Image 1 (cartoon, helix red, strand yellow):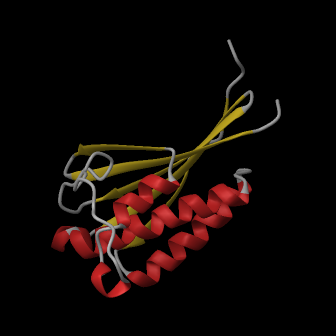
Image 2 (cartoon, one colour; image 1 turned 30 degrees about the vertical axis):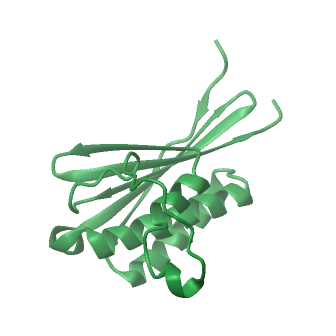
Length: 152
């Protein structure tokens, strides 16, 4: 059986507001660096975190804004393959962003035609290697994973 090294998850609880989103980003960078996540993959996770938090704040409803958001980061290492998992837990409206799809969006001809919004889920999918979702006890649990290889 291959050796498996798993670091304990680290956690941060924030308020559902923009000031704490900045603190969350700083926490993610520091925690991921401490756990040996390569810088390029920290950036990928941070882009996803920014977008997920923006969606919680804008679309989660009053329950999301009145509750805290729990962030958890864990890293698993197996010979050659490593995975960092960022879990975002919020009390917002149920929404499975790992499966949601609005279908193909036509490419706008100009920035004026593009408007705002609608690209966040596509961005999260493009920066992550895996997304999973579950709803438990009235809370959304979104897990964002990135993988990389390391020499054994």
